[in-house]
Image 1 (cartoon, one colour):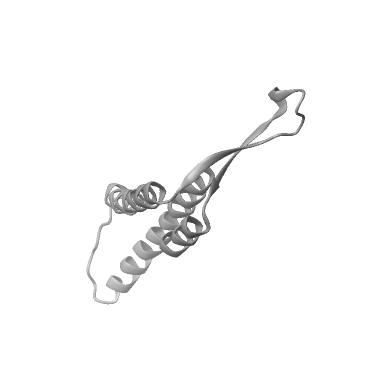
Image 2 (cartoon, rainbow, N blue to C red):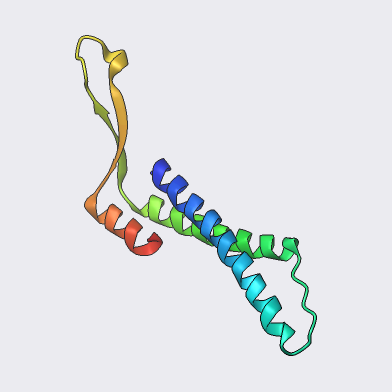
Length: 103
């Protein structure tokens, strides 16, 4: 689940900021045809991006809370338990819900 959270939030921050910068350039140049001056501060763009990230965090919390996830122990050497690895597993329904809601 942690890897999925990091992957999703990293994707949202990266492409959300790229989209917002492209959108700002589009608005500035499209308003130039009408001879209007528009100002978009970085603070306003950061606020929009933080709202999108907050929305994704809420979705991640809902999906993570509703899905059945558990820790599975992978035994590599039964005589040396310190080499055992732990992994996060979830049901097929939980994975389908995560990909359906979060992409």
